Image (tube, one colour):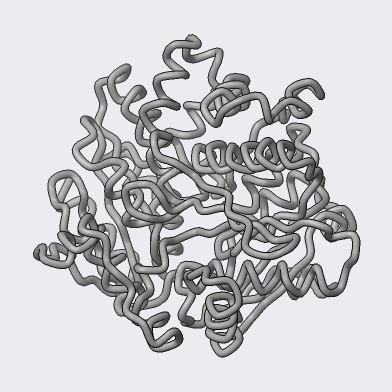
Length: 423
């Protein structure tokens, strides 16, 4: 099976997630000289082993240049702490990296096969808007987004629920876990799969992980310019696709000291890392809503990367979790001490980095992944800093548009009927 085949199928027939049979390991020369390359050059070398049997170099370069055409910024905020801003794409969230890359791959595939594909996506926040905008008006692709009613921010909802065209949006009475369960059940329903070509654009799709591994390597290169080597990455985590992307880069040879799995009270993975078993539970709603996941799908990929060894996973990952009160304190203290304004997810990553540095002298340098622009959470942040956050014009326009979502329950038969009736 090719990489594109796995991208198209999304989920394996047995309900499992796709992973490469072997992880390509790039040369030491590549990793030691990242500082001599720009982001696109780094991306080409990392992506090429996965796509070279399906696309030539110019085609791969075009996929990268068309999809990853927005900036990323690494900002020092305190001694030993940098924040990597990944929210400068069209929807102001890090999900733009994976969604846009995947959309270009699907576009290429659709043109080759002349078949329409229906992409199913469960979202707890920014995935939905990123996928909606990444796939908007892409020929041969229909997108169906599912989000939990009342559990995403207004801006997130408006960005994904007002587009129309080939973007269909379902407002589900339930939690993100209910949305994700509906998507997984659809992939396993033989009758549904006989009627339509189904795929996914969640982090369960392997195409999301590959572009999410690229900015870790870019960061290593930027730090090399300062003489900093082998940092710790602190990753705000929900479904754990972003952290798995970093682990994929590490398995490709990237020099790194380790990773922090930073969560809110949905702390299944930090609990596991502290020595307990992996025990999924129903998710709890928090102010860091994109991380409200009680059964993270990508944990299975993490296990695969470490050959099911608990000790190896715990050797490279350290877990931290913070409640809403602690998150609010982190947002306020970071702003008061440094002037840096962080969204709730980024604040959790920052708190994990701060705790790690305080408890481990070896953690000489931490990089916090900043996953969303703070304006998307102004209702949480503004009361904490007693200031208004200016809303960029490109976001304001979405607030003025009419919502086009359809309300459904969390029962699979209702979802299945919607898919077949609108096909």
